[in-house]
Length: 118
Image (tube, rainbow, N blue to C red; front, side):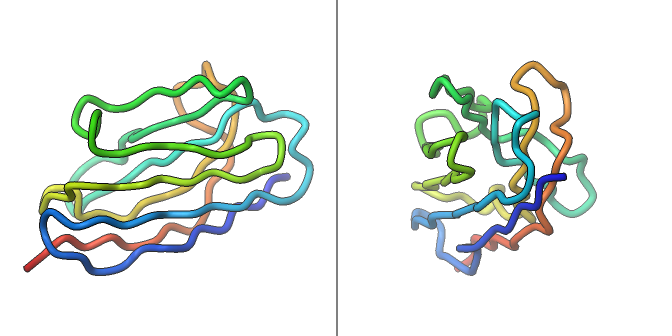
């Protein structure tokens, strides 16, 4: 089992920035990627960004150029730098870990709220 703990959410004005952090613990031999999903009220959970153990990255079109994922999967650390935030970025953000090729990652954190509002 892998345990994931997120931190860094909060309230920010449109155009502002936030940085999310996630630490994984436990038996991580089965994972080769970590990432961030989000779920806004009334919407399905969506993958925002992911990073592989080889440092490959992927971004959803909606955040490309504004968000940056970084970290070290082998060490169980992943970060999400969110810049130029918009109201539509408001959601609960979940750290997740699993296989890069999986449609949905296997392990999940408890989530952290990000609210973009003036």
